[in-house]
Amino acid sequence: MSHTPPTSARIREEHLLINHCRDFSAAYMGVKYIGRHTADDPFSITRQTLDALFSVLDTARFKKAKQAFFLYHEAACTLVDMGRTMENKTTRTIVPELVTLLMKSSGNRLRALGQALGRLADNHPVPDMPSFPNNSIPLNIDLAGLAEKFTPPGKVLPVDTQWTWKGRSLIARAGTNILGVIKFATTQDNIDEIHREAVWMDWVAKNPLGSETLVPKPVCIRNRYLFNITDELPEGGPGAIYGSVCIVFIPCPGYYDYPNSNGAAREQMKASFFKSALTLGRLSSRGIFHTALIPLFHNRVQQNRRNDNGRYLWEHAGRLDQWLDSSRFPNFAASGLRDFEHIACRKKPLDLEHYTGEYLLSFILVAGSCFRNKAPHRRGTDNTRPHVDTRDLFCPDLFESLLTGVCEHYFKGLTGSETFDPAPFNIPGLIEKLIKRMGLDEHMQEALRVQDQLAMDDDQFEKFLADRGVSVIPPKGKEEIILFTGPHLGEFNQPISIPELIEFLFKFSAFCVASFYMKNITAHATYPQDE
Image 1 (cartoon, rainbow, N blue to C red):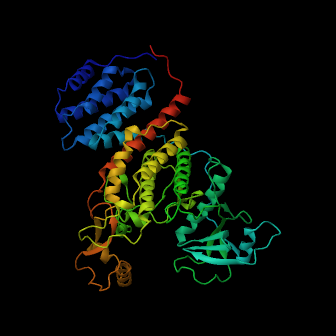
Image 2: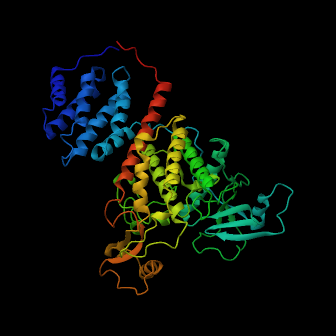
Image 3: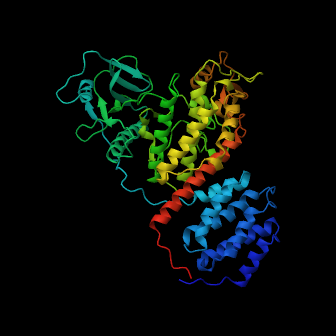
């Protein structure tokens, strides 16, 4: 189809933007005007149209404007929509040009470009996803019947088999060898979640993501993954399990070997990080995400009354709650990914950008804990100076190697490309900032607000404070209670203390989305003949 000329009014508007003749409000309206006209007539897009929009992003005139983000975001989204919906010689340059601009951006412009490029991810239904029955009735079975599945047919359990509890899981061991794991539900809702975990284990095993990926083998009896143990469980179990409803699996080697355990070898750490990043990239390319690589919170206390359940949304750049505690038991280990109950399919296009950033944030925090765990006793207890300083525990070269390798392997898993250039991301500079903040326990306190106190009954209130080291319980609901629960990354109710980290996440996640889009569009699109 041939190009149609733009209207004279639009040509004039484009000239005014290119020549910087518009103030902030007029520039915003001009961008909106161009966006409406090109959406109605995409074949009227010219190089001048693109230059007009890029001039808004390139100029420093609006950098200090209070609403600068919204102008940048409107211009960037208009360009992304042009680049996504129209393929010709002119518009095929848009996404690469936006990526180039992204790499040299910061502040509002970076955030706007990152969010706009994140829209390039598609929202088509995930193909070949497993099916999950709405109502799964557990199979009643005794403990011995389940234990039979830990050995090959005809074999019996070793005589030295012992049952031990690890959190909510009951583990059968023979010496140092783990024979099998029984994982119990913690709530009624969690029954569906652990059932999904077993189904996802089976799906990943049948849809291999590479020779590096090791997956536990779920036990299936009479086409059921969900069981209800009918006899008494061994003593020592936690109180927080929901009856005896469970799934059962045979773990792969290394499933409980965390990369941040004290004494973990350098190469073991790298293998755990890189293998898991590669698998996450491959899952992301299929529209499948692990939604809790580690538990990330802006404010744990407000889980039950905030719309976001207190979960950390890195795009908002807020303070990160209890980062070191969040990193204790990551959902990746020497075997690769763990806890498949947190696997979910894409729900909206921005999921790819969000989870890419969340993965990198999680890997960075766990890497920091690898160094801090060399001396776990060196930890802040309050906000008094001098702050506890553990920067000597960090190895900058290893930290940089871990982060660079994670980026390379995730990018390879997502795009299939062996080529990743870390230079534009200035990883050495970021590592310097990370060590300064993660190695110094500056932010230790949080406030238990009156509203959150009143949401608890008396027993919950007292237990909450006692669990956080408060020996003298104050009256409930009278005033805010200051607690020392850190280290946190940022003061309570303030931005994150490492803004450079958020900029890195925007830059890397948007770059990945754009690269994935370009790979797919190049592989599948048939371009119209340019005239």
